[in-house]
Length: 129
Image (tube, rainbow, N blue to C red; front, side, top):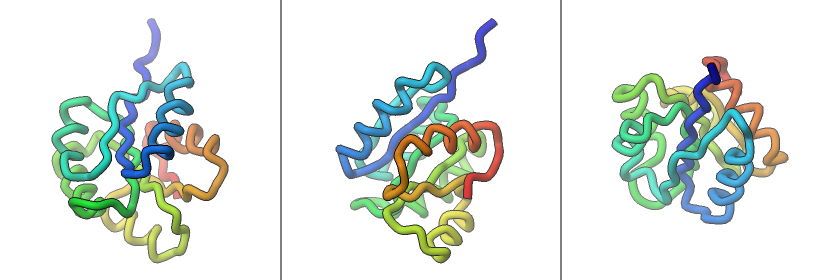
């Protein structure tokens, strides 16, 4: 019996970064990118419909504030673990992400391949800060 793959939803208005995440994670045998959004407007509904295990959520986007959508997602689908992706790595950003219910924080200036291990970590229920 094969284990279920980690279902990932990418939510990022930067099309190049979203595409890179999709290619990188989609190449992993234990992961499947199930969808992509350019805003957090439909985050909750989409994560529920696609049964996302892990959501990669950009911290700054137009439309609905991502941290507000994150708080609603945690209430509506607590099984989805969220990794906030940001160009900022200051402690205040990490604290805001944690307070909203994020399971991890990824700084976009880091080596993108580190994201693979972080997705696996939060999918197992571990914190990724």
